[in-house]
Length: 390
Ligand code: NDP
Image 1 (tube, rainbow, N blue to C red):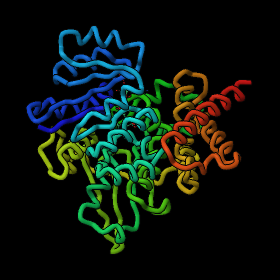
Image 2 (cartoon, rainbow, N blue to C red; image 1 turned 30 degrees about the vertical axis):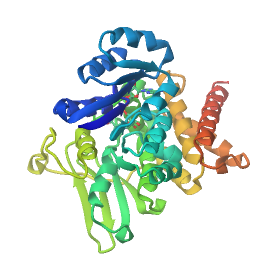
Image 3 (cartoon, rainbow, N blue to C red; image 1 turned 180 degrees about the horizontal axis):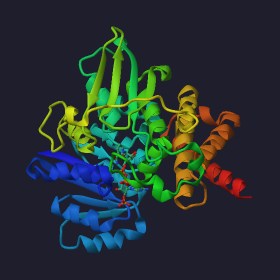
């Protein structure tokens, strides 16, 4: 039996992972499931899957979790430290699907146990690329991508020599506002930004898709995961979300990965890798689709892409700054304190402030330093919001 843990089990990726495990429960021994506020779902899944341990990120919800799991024999715990402890439990395969930089400490801890880490939490590589890859190498752990674009690139690269790769192209649907006039974006609401044309995902990544901050994170993730130069990575708007990524080689050949927009493909690929198994995803019917469209992204519409290119060139702690400022800007947008277009302004203000502060971006990439940078960037994002309001 394969020992599996799922971090962020109550979220969109976590639930898709559980869907796959539920189809063949006798193949898996569930070690730990973690969630946040959704105690009911966490407890129900932990009970059904007979998990050893259930952890909520919120310390003040420990008693609720204990009540919900009473009599089940499932151990319970709460808080950020408990998440990291759960990651230290022996497992073979760990899904990293917490949203945001909160996924970083448990991800690093899991790698230290030498597990296979299925990485949906792109923030882990954005904030701490070199640290994560070094930790994986030092502990013989394996990192497998779960983001659909990175899974697609990984699959297109199977058996290929990286020195023959000329470019990697990741696609983007263009999100909720792809066809909106630019002049209307300033008044876009949280509800409008929370609806994705093709993918069914958590609210935060759905809004990040509308602003292309999600694609910006993925640009940085691509650079870190595949160790390519920023100039080799392109973004292409592809409204149908059928081609997830393409890899161009030095002989002019291009390998494209296609599939229905269903995260269970990329999750299942990482779950069964290096094998391929039957997965419950819709089969493509290209004749029925009729056409696939592609266009260059408009950087005036999506300033996040320009900022991501700056981050890739700057390196050091700038990925952690970018992500933390983005997370706070998104919090403020969701709380209706700032408008849709102001999110990019806030992130740029924070990046500029770090650029101007001597040495901060060049602190060694240790977990402690990254968490400190994350903390300061969030504070400076809040400052930027206060200044705008004042
Ligand atoms: P969701 O918002 O649906 O789920 C997030 C999960 O993290 C939930 O289990 C949530 O708990 C938990 N969580 C929230 N805050 C914290 C915290 N501070 N500490 C610990 N746990 C927390 O997100 P998604 O599933 O959409 O995304 C998860 C990750 O996967 C993100 O990094 C995203 O970018 C990435 N990803 C997602 C894709 C998708 O299709 N959804 C595609 C590719 C990548 P609760 O809900 O109980 O509060």
